[in-house]
Image (cartoon, rainbow, N blue to C red; front, side, top):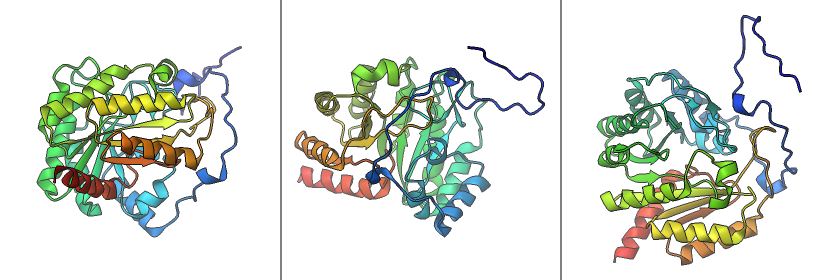
Length: 319
């Protein structure tokens, strides 16, 4: 095989995933009817997009190609992705650009807070790319963003979806001290699939991260999610549930993996809605306060409504 590199054209376009360019195409089976969604075209969607662009912000909704973007943005529910649009890791499932990110934007926390105010959000989700290039993995930037939102919109509840802060001593403490209402960190898949799906991460480190949040501040809700359809077995999914409950995680999400491009990991199987329903029932028996399991479930899908249910479930459990 010969690889051609264009060093002449003035407007060279860098591949979104340079590490995947030379991989053979991975073919997924055709999508079943239950996985299809309409293209976004509502007025609410357009208004949300304008607010995001006017403030120079990045959303995971766009960068990760979320299938629920039309529904969420129509309701002015956008998940902001801080610290740029380029990730230092190269997970096999993710559509976010990979490479060396630029410097942090010191004004970004205030821009996010302004967008939250303009959108009138009662609940906001903040996530980020992995920033292994930073000494604290971006923990201080997360904390500043939380504080900026608190100052601008004190009634808004804040949910964060963080990287694993692997080998970043003291990083988790900075984020927890800023007191988000929900701390989410996704396991993404079962342990046996990590080397091929999420090679830069460590399964038990992620479990321990979630456990430590609860140890430092038991009032913070913890949350995690996985994708199915990546070659996992049912018993492995059930073991993940047990591992998360051992870490006292409150909220579990399970959704169908969808292949962003032919260079990403193939969909091994489309899990049926009935199977998702079965996972949800089992998860509740294991003690989760909240479970969302369906083909189109994503970490921040219906996050505001789910937060209200999460609060009600905790109150009921404490009576």
